[in-house]
Length: 136
Image (cartoon, rainbow, N blue to C red):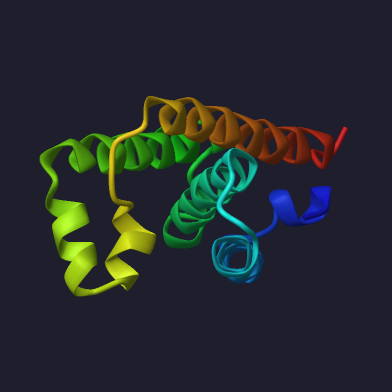
């Protein structure tokens, strides 16, 4: 995303977010489906999930400033991770596997750290692109 896109009209910002979201989901599915299950691929998948959450917020609300989009995305990710403590996502995922991709399966505190770090990075990049594109 270039500086011009970051401060672009909401329609353009929404289209760019949608394209980046599709690419992020594709990367996440590739990590999940093609690579061996290791701590590194787990972290990569978590980071891609968090970035996808950030992009989904921008897609839905392109006028939101990056810190607000980041806060909403982080809240979603943390809520989903905490919801895993109930055991419901694991149970539901056993019956319908795509649910596991959206809600995960079991709680892992490391995931919380990865989510927050990835969203902080996405938020910072988005904010820096907006600042660098402002007229001087």
